[in-house]
Image (cartoon, rainbow, N blue to C red; front, side, top):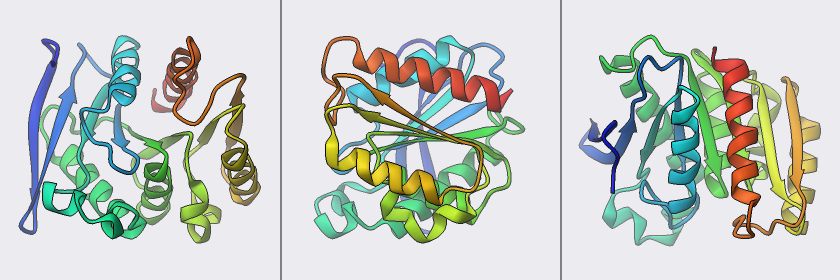
Length: 213
């Protein structure tokens, strides 16, 4: 269910059509494009929760399916970080052309495998991308790109998500940009514990507010 300031959009390029939801608060001062994790998309309840919080602090949001319905059934494509980064850049190009978002500074919010795509995209086309936030992310999937990321990057990990904590600590060491690693106490990979997703939204909102203004 979309709210009054959320609009269904279709992004078309090169024979590919991606469905998305553009959230537009009054007078946004930036736009955050979401890169979802494996098997997830624009209707992800967790990312929609974070998107609504970002809208409340004055940021536009774009939640979209990075894969078509047919592609989403192919597990190889679900984990094809190069392809997902290509699609994220396709969305970035659309945001830069779209009348409602043209001229806004851009941030990426990546969850799980989507964080690898977000960091690769930020490294490949740094223009206008001013911040990246990773939630329970797999930045290691973009390992060779990490030293080239220039956008300030926030890595958020659950305190009980041990393997992913190690992956994020290793990725943090490879990043040469402004960076921060936040471990949310008591949270597992999906931040399903009471109050933990609220902490993710708060940290992300503060990061984007600082760098997209």
